[in-house]
Image (cartoon, rainbow, N blue to C red):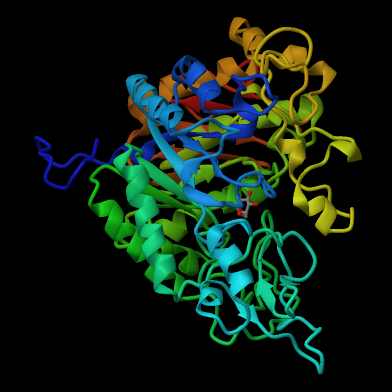
Length: 532
Ligand code: GLC
């Protein structure tokens, strides 16, 4: 069903649904497998919508399920307007959209505009057509340097390791900021822009509520593709080295593309876009969420913060400052499919879990939009996978020096005592699941009021129903070293975190929820609390 600008909506303007929504990121391969091939799929997600409703999230973000040879697990798209048979088909997608809406949740999907798959018809045509052809103009093909052209056209490296250029048979090179199977599109080309508009409308007409824009700080490249200072690196889970400019990303022309996206979305009231924006400087970040660009920008400052009150507070202040003058709410993320899961980042084991519980309450107390990565609500740790199991292109591209992101992508344990814990009818999931995960299944955790899952459910319920969460400003209280406390200015909720080694007095108020047992009326180490 197509929603249009003229569908009447009664009453005064209300704040948009995403303003303080809790999104749940479904890494499609790893959520639930309905057909027994060991890989998650759309029907699998549909079969678990009841769980997501029970958890209490407002919206889903699905990682790519489009036609793809899966060189980067779907972020290499061969047809952006079809479902890969591995995940289902368009009819399954339509059923999923309808059922998600019936469960009272919104559904948003990934959009991958920076590059295509090397199997995309455009790239195949470009290879066939040869140097100097119009077909090559949709990508960045160049002659190499040196007498025989055997040196790449510039010194850029790929985010996954190695040069950002690959040479084709006729001697030309093409640019890929990620894997060689992900050639970068040339965004000056009108076909590229027109195709994106078509893709947006295709999915909007099928009823999606929005998009997550992959590498939203990519796409535009500087004229002439000059060499860059190799010390400037923007990598996933890293930040800009402040003194050097990474010419591969965050070029000003990218904002035209976001304005184009926004124009299409404005034809579909109630829809939104969130950009994946690995841009560290606040004012550069803010530009992406100007009123005529994206509705939301992922910032990764909480992902980058240590479990330390000062570090977390700085991340919060900087995130709020980045959107302060934009009218766009802040977004909060502790983990996603590209970074080490936070239970592990915080030290792993019981300690990591305790800290992850504390940070869950901090994150969910903050004003703005929150993204929960699937499995985070179960407290899943990163998995140390054996070499043979690794599939992330980073592993090969880095010459086996970086293990890549598979460890945070291990499928979810649903029930039972042995792998694949109800994830798949097949015994084996696409990544091996640890033998200890019987203790972490949804089934187990639903029964246990002290589980991570129960904490998330409880927190999400309070967040939905309690008064304290209004307004988008914070005020900080004075707090002992290693601790902080803030109050939501509009609603009055207080959140206190203790990352020090000793129990500390609580701010005044009535306790709504704590991440762990209290020490009398003191807040113990590695614990957070909500008060009103
Ligand atoms: C984004 C995705 C990541 C993918 C990359 C290339 O950073 O989150 O998973 O590998 O883009 O598309």
